[in-house]
Image 1 (cartoon, rainbow over the protein chains, first blue to last red):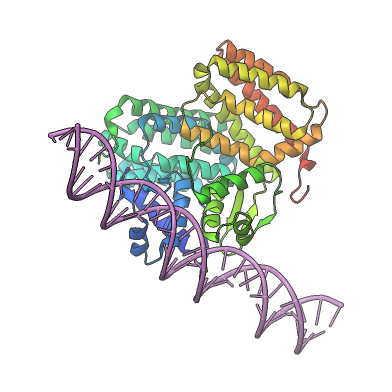
Image 2: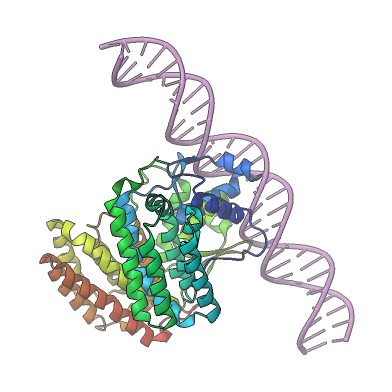
Length: 223
Length: 223
DNA sequence: TAACGAGTTATTGGATACAATCTTAGGCAA
DNA sequence: TTGCCTAAGATTGTATCCAATAACTCGTTA
């Protein structure tokens, strides 16, 4: 699913990958400005590769570039986030559909492990990570570069919301999600594509609706 | 829908926009290599803004950048193209749904004009242009930046296929498309969102299936 | 003759220097 | 005090130069 390799070098790619990690991890909160020189110094490079990296991140929707003024960590409005979720509702069942027939036994086992680990885990950051791994792994059978990229981007741009929302639910508010994961996994194992699609659709849709019921979850500049 | 403005200057953006035009117009066929220096000279600039422009186009899927080796006009395999169409089938009804309630009378009139113009026109390039304008205009009521961008990108990356396919149909092979346009327009005018969505879905799907029945429509390097 | 390999050339990637633009601070006037 | 205007500072955009990598040529050898 991921772009992977880049076998050897490529300063700009290295910087882009590192920055992406830092942004998704929440180290840079939305709305924060990024100065090229800072990043350059931080990675011991000049501004040239940094600029290229910023362009890549801009393309992925992680930051926002404005000509002559600078770069900011992207911030989604609630309505934009709902938009992303609506797109996810339509697209992810499609990629899941393409993926299921090609999932190996090893992958299924790993999915089972992830679903169980999520159940036992209470830490928010690892929950986020496991959830992401689980879903993207269910898509890993799809032999599609472009659709995968698109899905990846949707997850990236909504990452901050997922974090804020997960924090809000904290304790056992996300039990429905866990159940849905298990249901979906069992449908996948039975190769019941249609059912898996339906569960996934509901899973995303339910989250979207819950999100819009908690409009204060995430206000720009908050956190 | 389009990014518009860029009020004043911005060499890299200007180059990107110009190159995009040239690529979509078919001036640069898929698979052709782009040398930075050439473009730089062509636009009377240095390689720096050219590289930035190439990054933008890469992000939009119009060209493909490979580290240390160069840039090529993107070429979709038939299966990748079908993939794009499957995504379109799911996404465009969504944006149409969001758009319909906000379409002004002026827009409806313009849509009528475009649909009629397409009927009378025989030239392939203008047909392509009118078709694109028609569809994107039906989406113009959607107050959504991100989804619009995504749809725009889908259209861009499949542009070469649409051209090749339209050439193949030539004479009156695209009558179904014309009828579907009129049907959709009438549904839009009646604010029958559900019906419009269904027609659009069928419109895209039909095209996809026809495309896969003509696998020789477009072989990389052809044209 | 075909295949392998070293050296040359062309092209891209990165660093530095300069220009253009925006932002901000400070002063002046209403 | 508030608003606007001007000027200095900071930051981004572009040009040029050098380094690194890849492609190509040509010669050698099995």
